[in-house]
Amino acid sequence: LTVGGVVAFFASPLGAIFFAVFNSLVLLAILLPVLGIVGFNLWQYWNTMEAPCPNCGAPARVLKNTGVAPNPSLCLNCGSLVAANVANDGIDAVGNSVNPNDGMVDATSLLDTLFGGTGGLLDTTTTTTTTTESTDQRAKKYQREQTVIDVEVEEED
Image (cartoon, rainbow, N blue to C red):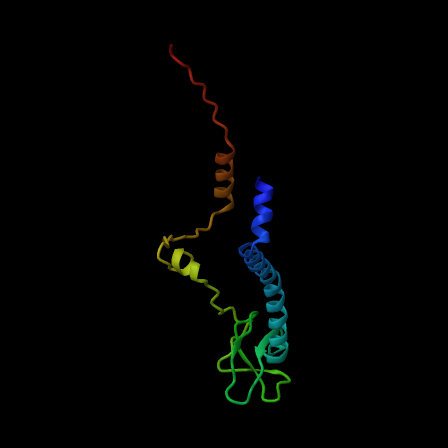
C-alpha cells in the first residue's frame, strides 16, 4: 500500500511538481557554491592586485586604482594603510605608516577590550612589585619550599 501510494503520488501532476521543485533545490545547493567561488575568484583577479607592502615587505592585497580615488586597505602584517599606485603595478603607503620595528603597534582586539586584557569592562587591575633578593635570601626561600612537613592525623572513635 505504501509503495503504491508513493508511485501514485509521483505519477500524478502534483508529484511531478514536487519532484521538479526538489530536484531544482538540490541542483541549486550544489551549483551555487561552485558558481560563487568561481565568480569571486574572477572578480578578485580583475579588481585586486597583490604586491609587497612598502613598509614591511609582506604581501598585501589591495583594490586596483580606478582613477577616481584610492581605496586604502590595511596591510595584515604591520597595519599600514596601503593603496595601489596610479599605474596599478605596485602598492604605495597612504597617510601615516606604522613602523613595524618600533614596538608601538597596538594589537588589542575587541574581545580584549570588552573582557579584560587592556582596561576592559571586566579587567581586574593587579599591581606587581619586583624586589631584588640576595643569594642568601634565595637560598633560604629554596630551603623553606623544599622542606616537607609530615603530619599524622589520629582519628577518634
